[in-house]
Image 1 (cartoon, rainbow, N blue to C red):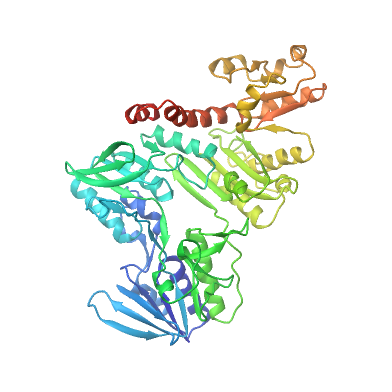
Image 2 (tube, rainbow, N blue to C red; image 1 turned 30 degrees about the vertical axis):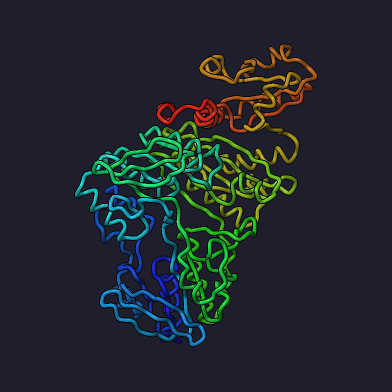
Length: 571
């Protein structure tokens, strides 16, 4: 059996190694147009920031090491320029000498990945404007920085690469600005959770110019001018485009393979394309979202590796199936960790799902053990069925552990109320006897049983105008005086029983505290005395972070402020 693989890295290299482990006699050749067949793509920003200092650390395997261990022919600087399914051959160009030759195959695997989205804008292509996708891109950026010592950079785009690169450039001492059309960073997160990422970025000196459209670039004064629609331009010594990736599927399209979203390659659950004996994996393929079942593009290393393995199994006579991508991901944002799995509330509603959420702020480990840090968790579930749909967590310790537990629960099909039943490891330095995941389950179970009724951030305007309700803040007097919502009366929870006569009977009571815990206790006291209560999901700390971030943007636009004034407010 002769197997040709187009592209290495996660999907292609994984498939190649797995085929060899299953079939000692298969003839396997990988054609990779770059000079690297297996590298740590996710580590590239950290090399630029000197966190990783040895460039060889980025290379997981070399052509020589791959051949020595697996007897797989790794042909770097070789580009497959066309596929001929009717005769089962590919045309290959040797990029070092220009030679073009034909290679036949029994099975063909496409792992071309994705390319940085290149907008058709004036100035794209100038030498101080970069993209970051490959090792070669990384070396170009690093060489430019070492040679020219730029003092400022503008990053167009606020996704994973944009944030990681912003942090690393900032750690090198550069002034960094992120500009993008969406009004929030990190689309996998809901706007309320993204606000915490915004705060962390600003705290470390990253300038955020959100809600602005880039219209082009100009070389100016030994730097780059970033042109913005209807606003003054930005100036920087260098610019990096990090506005996303596009499936690299020109080969597949020309060969007549069925294409899907953004011309990605359509595959079935065996990773087979529409053409017999051709498989595809990685960032170039369209997948099913594990939670919604909808077609999706999810560019992550974990799914690509799994898909490569599944292809190898099937080529070697097995029957492995890809169940879909869940979108589990985690990112370091300076001192903070942000993680997500499943779908967020925004996309759940767009998919037509009736959803509810709980937001809580537990400690990373037992409160009496030194060093605990608060994390904020948002868990999304379907109303009525209580099907677990997704989760987002932002904090400083223990975030990755909890998101993996929740990702596993979603994959296993657990009901959201079943989170309370998970038997999770506990010792004071690592967790609490009631783990944060258990706490989310307790809250959702209370909702299911009618013990807890909530109100949410989007209800604020409505209830603040409603004279038929009571608004009650149960924090301490000092906490209340440091900041509170307009219209709320303050009665500390520990004084509530003695002062309950101050709360008008017959009106629903909307409660808030710092994190949602004391207000829940207050709601039980009031419910036990004949009141109808609603607890604010997230608490005042959450409200303060989110509303201040939104208000800055919305107030600036509403007031018609000019660009410079908006920047002053934001930063």
